[in-house]
Image (cartoon, rainbow, N blue to C red; front, side, top):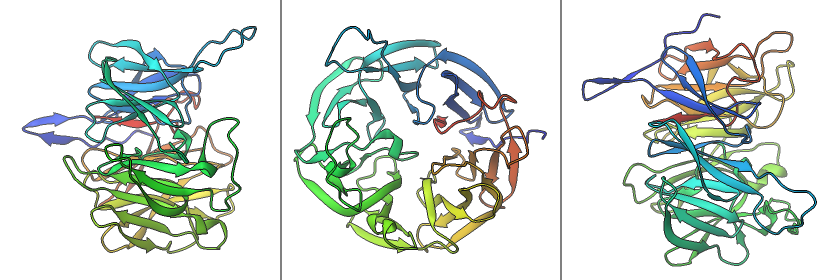
Length: 361
């Protein structure tokens, strides 16, 4: 299909063209222009295309596996955090680590060395000077469990109980709810539990905000036919449950730039591919959920991705094409009119958008 004209936004008289970055199935880092749907390969990242990139301070960060000598036994970290400077076009090593996340104000980075330790770095790779240790019995979530949301929020850092641990060799407690979700405050060491959780859908913190929104699926999803989304406001820790208008909510989602809406996925039993998901937009205040007509994600697995563009009116998402058609298509959705416009950056599905996709601001 012909690519639609992408949305733009005006800031102080200047037009800002949204850009996206992603790692393709061949490990290449791409930067694409949403306005004209042009793209270029900027680095060989060798990162996992199923793990979202991190963008802050004009740089893009990812985790790359280390080359290992199979004849040498080592206890060192087997992966490293790299960064790409969009201004200079150069890539460089930041530090050894298994995960990288941005601070809530996006001025520095946390590099995870294992499930229980974080080291702070400035975006240029300079050590910020502090190592944080998660309290005993709590762990940092796996990046594979977080599509849009950063676990760093205004009130601290999201952590999970042992059953949720992602460290190889760690025992699983057998908790049927997959573990307890909590907020750890590194300044005080206090951990505030939220409850048994299956997955965190999204988080939102407004610039300079002192509280956050957390959208998550409770552990009860594993034992009931319905699977609501719980939205917790950390200003007073009040929560509300929102039920799907049809079947159940699926994996993945994202808050709009102003936090007023939440993009979610709902399982769709349309007989095309199992599972197939349909994009929906939730009004956070009212709890109303509107299905987006024509925005099906024929992903064939349980993980989906969606990103809001900076204008707050458009979203992009994608997945496998409808069975029997090729190549895969992504779509731009106008959240005001619900118009769906298909596009693709590359006819080669191995080089097009993946779950790693992020917006570069």
